[in-house]
Length: 566
Image: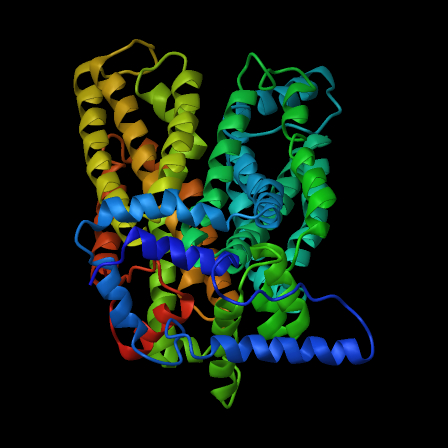
């Protein structure tokens, strides 16, 4: 049975309050009898949505959703529905809230990931020239210390991800992100004002903690405030902000700009994220908290209703969405005890999605993309490319372009499809990269003499292919999808654990990649092709499709032991 475009439009109109559904007024904080009236209105909203057959309390939403997703000429209909009616769900408050989260926090992660690549030589020269001119100075910066500075960022990210789960439950996603700006300020000051390598390394660790918290809380917040129809596109904005700031850091880090070898250039470069911090501190306090957090965790029903009205519009009919939240809370009340760590091991409905979440984040980091980001200049120089800054910036441009494409494809093709095609394609391109390195080594030998070669050019092309496929799949999907696999009570812990694994894998690849490239040359990248294949198989067999499904429907699939691939 297919779903027509007209039916899609009517459903969106109902959610916006332009249909026949009764409009619910925006609740205001008042005392006395008015307060009792507010509580009665909340209860009325819950009752009005409780009979909705899309809520997991009744019917068979899993089968209904599978029928919907298999409609006849579905691809064109889904594309038109997304680009037309679903965009009506964008409200000024929703747009501002998402922008405040991703521009203020996601950008910190992206910028600080890419900023260390180009100015490494400038930083070393700045410290070591200072040591030469001042014999009493002990500020010599060795290559080993620089490798530590690169990799310790990921170690800080692991710690930040662990702390983020506690922050999410204690003060919420919004206030957790605002509080996290303190670590951003401290980290940037230590980096930009560093007078000794140790001070710079500590700054990289602190800014890594900041990024770790951001990578947990931003996807969680955006997922919880977004309508189901826009959850994919809005969720990818987290990755889009990351890619845009990776590109900006690479451009600003060019020798012609802030990557120059004088005393101030690279210091200004590491101070740029103050702009993102200032933006969030000015805007985010005026944005609503997550309605799910308010309703389920804090039991503040009236505030949750006001937050939903603010995000969906004052005339929107929120009864369906509020009823789904109440349904989730009711399921949690049925449990006789809170979810513990051991439950994620002993309970199949929690263990399976946690393993999938870990595999998703491993696919992002162990696929080898970290090496391309951190050491792209070194890779291209090894390939015989003279001015390696040009292809390094090209990496950032390709990343942004294909992440933008993902924004429009994710709610049309689905998360599962994009991830599997992206990850599988990366494996193929890493195989091609290995062949190009072999040809470069066999026919041109010593790469210390820079010259353009056919294998070198093809190596750059294949590297850009890896980046493009990463942006389509493993780059964006894990951040969004892990939040879609768990209900409210389990979500903070599961997202935190998955993100810790992400940062741990980031650390391992970052610290080992230059040695893989050096000692396993020219076969080092074959290792990543093999890893892509190993990760692809279990994700193909067990990863469900979450596009168009509520979190409740996805978790019902795990409870029923079903793999909803379509």
